[in-house]
Image (cartoon, rainbow, N blue to C red):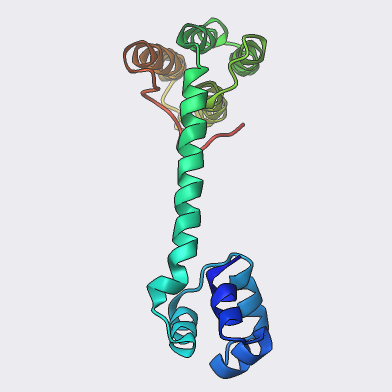
Length: 191
């Protein structure tokens, strides 16, 4: 039960009565009672009308957010205990074999992560990084061609693009080996 509902019922008020007293819509009160966190004017007005402090009105919501954070931490601990870092390194390294065949540099690590039962945040980031690189590499290559700096520049650019992916893979491999995390990763997952 939300703190607002608890206090409202202790004061023998209906939602409609509270809405009338506070000049806050019934719908807003319903949303707060179902879990939304009151802010600003709404928080201040409800606290004043109910004759309680703003912190007291938010107390339950703070406890819920602490519970949610604790559950997420527990999930991460459980997940990190199930990670076989040798298999993760193999999944990461599998992309090197197929750098010149871009769809395979994504598919092989993805298939390996399922086959080796390593669907965790590290393998998702490895695959996401390969997808991102596979999208970005042709764009950079096409921009290089449009600059019309000659054939030798195009070859150097192509080699540079391929070597950048090799560097990403090998650097992440070293970081997994040393610190059990990725050195280069995205702030989001594509998969």
